[in-house]
Length: 104
Image 1: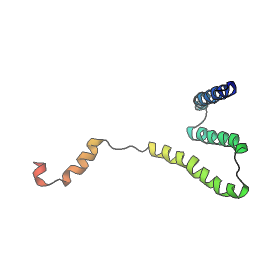
Image 2: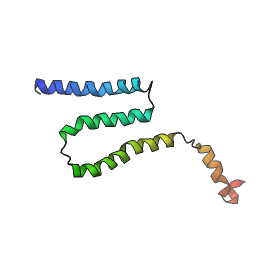
Image 3: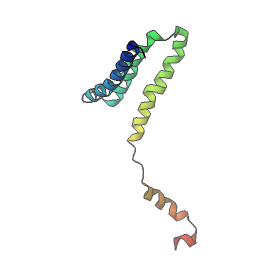
Image 4: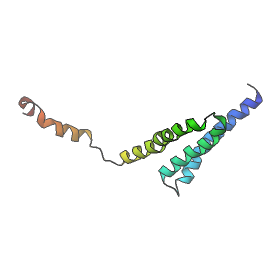
């Protein structure tokens, strides 16, 4: 491995590690959904110069990015606040439907 490649690998690892630190700092003042959105925006801004996306393709790419990025995480966060019943609750809701010989 060339020395230049080694330093590029170290740079990528350092940026990846700093991502966790930046998220932790950001969550002290900003909501989690906004931080997730900002992560996607920063990565998109950094990657745009390296992609060959035309204006015609961008028309289809932006709704997909919104749907699979922001909307996906919003639904996940909304679902995580819904209380789910434990296994015993599921068992007791199912038990009355058992045949009579099982209820004895």
